[in-house]
Length: 335
Image (cartoon, rainbow, N blue to C red):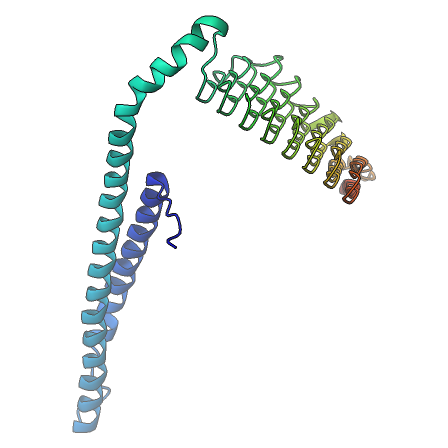
């Protein structure tokens, strides 16, 4: 039985760029080694010295010929990868084009009734808008990601999935604002979306829950604030009632006092609780004035509690406490 093959044009293009970088490195190395290794001068005027110089120069020339073949191989390989990525992209577009009108016909009734497709992913919230992600298709589709917030604006909530699909990720909060919560997973199957990261000093968003089968979303990371308390990590989402692990809690943000790690999400029936988030690290203390002591470093934040296990499963590990900041350097002594 043949296994499935998945080809991503973006991954192929990235691989082609990496291979092209190898070719450039080979050319540079070959050019740098050409003169010193192919035109070796004899150490003396005797026949033995001239023979040795000729021998080593011959080895250098052979290396240059071999290296030229290697460069040509890499160039050809990179060209093949690039053309392959283009071919796959064209094939995907060609296959999708005839299906789109049919999908529009299928989705038209549900759009008219509830403003939501039957099959398809929800739209993402625009960056800087704090808008919520759109809901996924009623039957099949992932929720859209929430938009990031502007300064002082919370990140958008991730869109909910329908029957089958993954909840959308919450958007990152703007400066001083909380991250958006992750969207709910599919009613039948699908994991909750991850919470968005908090803005400076603000809490990360909570992970989305999975209703029946699926894992809870991870909580968002708390925002850092060097002059105040770091934001707390978001709470992990609850795992599916039938099957699924709780989401891990988000890490606390770095601060003058590190933020608390988020609690791991609970499991319900079969599944393990999510791990608690790591506490945020304290900042380094300030340097002392002339002849004075440096200030004390900031205290690390507490780790988050691990989530509760289901009837069958393990409780989540509690998060590690954050590292305290190093003390500041002492001031320069006065002569």
